[in-house]
Length: 92
Image (cartoon, rainbow, N blue to C red; front, top):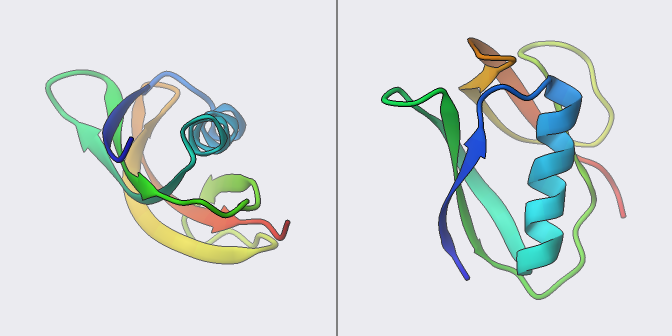
């Protein structure tokens, strides 16, 4: 089901990437956006339906090198702190 999904803002970068990947795979979705919910320490993930298998997502500090294809740059809660991040899609 496409829509907005709340994700804990207390996750590490690695755990956030794992959680986003899991959310995609369980719901046959593709992450299209990530924003902070400033009323709570959580992130709001926007996703749309996706019938194809996608590679895992990796979260890194904004500007840090990573393999894969950059999906988006944004500010998100990481370990409870607002952090500038890049989200990368790894090859299947």
